[in-house]
Length: 180
Image (cartoon, rainbow, N blue to C red):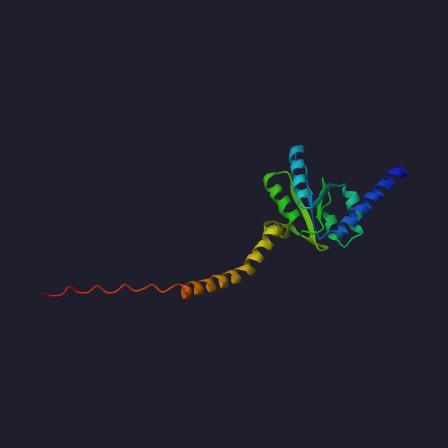
């Protein structure tokens, strides 16, 4: 039987995982077996830079944490090696980064995920992974707003250039030579 100290530590881990799951808008569960330390370090760095929290977790502890949330469908995939990536403010970052990583590493596979407390399957995660980043989406929206204004400014400038240009003085017609 585990000691009281170990049980207390596990309760803290479960409480932290439960809070993390409840505060996340999106998350992805993966099977991370077969990746080396260098690849894992690079993956963790990329996820951290994108604001995604990624941790390896014991299945039993994650099952206990999921039981305290609205994500009951996730516990079906909790077997083997498990890591979870969650984001509190970006819906696509974890899916995009982990899908790209899974495409280049044959043993690394995505198990399942969630968005806004709804469990989603692999096809939805794949769809999310294909979406551009938040910054690119915002730039596209800004470009769409700016395009009509830019076109209007160019049209006004063309009118000003056309009407405001000094009229060219017409050269006098050459006189025909006098006949003698």
